[in-house]
Length: 103
Image (cartoon, rainbow, N blue to C red; front, top):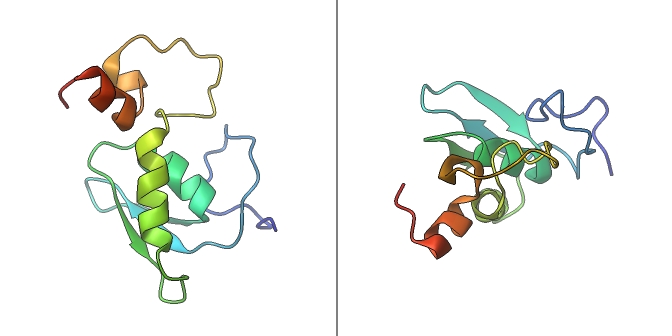
């Protein structure tokens, strides 16, 4: 199922389709937010420093946890698949933990 139009959490440069309806809100460190499907919300959250995720009122149980867990394994701006990733800020949080890089 895809969102039409795409959810607000989908970055304009991200070519991937939505995977279901918007179920969470992702907030940045300044409390600006966007609602999103789990797929795009995870990609957005992975790209933010100090971001947070909250379920929308009608979200399925565990939606925010699934987004948070998925974001941990994604590099920032995951839609730039060919971008060189050499700095800790360009790797996923999980990968940096495995490498022993402090945040």
